[in-house]
Image (cartoon, rainbow, N blue to C red; front, side, top):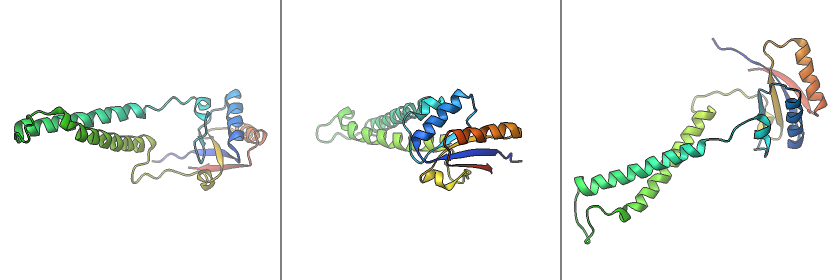
Length: 175
């Protein structure tokens, strides 16, 4: 059975208003569910307590796997499967392996990072992510609070937070 979330969110017209609102929410110890913006906002990650992405580590691992795959495959082909001496080149000629190793490094790293990014962000095929407001992807900035189990007093406190921080609009949605 799918569990639904009640979400109270406020829309902001400017990223500086959004940043100021997040600072106020942190000072008031409000539990922010998520912040949405149409483009990356510099300095927002530390305010939300988000750590640096580790996607670059995955990219290095995928690239190393591509290099190893290319190098081992070419070593096997030229020394065991098809050992032909052509142009005076020995069976095992590592400098000749460099271009293909580079290409497989780039290929494995790029495909691996895309698949990893899509998996981590929940953007795979067939995934239906709920959208709070269509304008968030266009020109609005949003702070969202989950309000399941909140009393009317707590919800009115959150609405007061939005009005004091300059939200242009406050809405509730069940997702």
